Image (cartoon, rainbow, N blue to C red; front, top):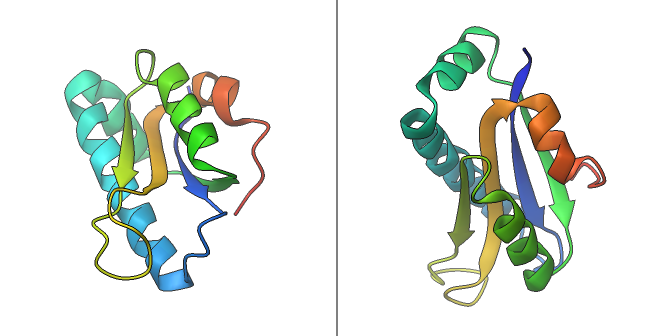
Length: 116
């Protein structure tokens, strides 16, 4: 079984590359921690197989929140809100980390999204 982690980034916020990188890191780590509690076997297999990560984009607050609502009871995931210290407003939704989890399960929710 192939496992991966997908990070969904809002592309409409105008975040710089550094800001995007830090938000992606937050999403990856928080989703990993949730997956570790929910299904440690997935996490161990994912770590042993190279820790595949894919970063995709989505437009808009409502779209990101809607995706989170569809995924949250099925797969380990983490919704990231910005602290508002630099480029964007405090509390803005920036990213969603999903998994690590089985690739076919994540693809049910993310296959239509384009790479960042």
